[in-house]
Length: 250
Image 1 (cartoon, rainbow, N blue to C red):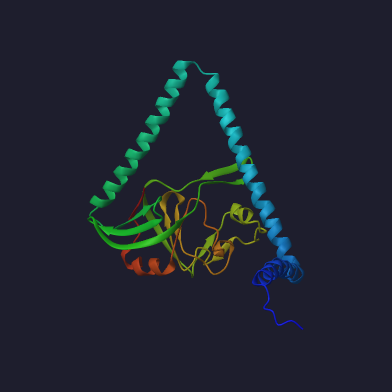
Image 2: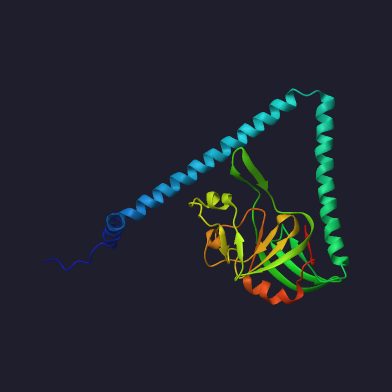
């Protein structure tokens, strides 16, 4: 038998050849051990791709419709339309800045909700007393046609009409159940439906906390057009809130 040393190049080739084989073997074992997980991941990937395609198709249709409408306009109408859109956007920016300034000058204790920053502030005469993270319900069209309504985060000034505790009941709209994809309850008046504490504002706007039961107990779902705050934050500021307290949205 020869005692000559082995060629290191041969050893290196052997390692390189075995590594891909070992990886393929591990992947095969993983597939055999978790077939359901592989199928679920594949379905989720297909669903995400299909959603992306649907969104892109909707965007193209909207852009095509805009181009069609603009093509039917005269040059004067196009310039006038662009001017109106620009003016409306400018007015909205001015209004938002005015609401911010008004909230800073408010002498009484009040709440301010920054829609873009997802934050709520307890303030008085320009002094920040408490800053609280919140979640803002996105703009959505809810209900079943033709009886539908578009809900959007509010802008402007509201006042607290009522403070609701978890020992009180609140009647959830029918569309909440449909929006969540669950059967509508026979009795939609649920105790603690808006969490441990909630603020009912004039105009129908709601600032609520996470409930333990009911359709709104889903952490991934925020009531469209509403504000969801942490229960501990609402408890901390409860003594400062009464009916008539102003809430600024900007």
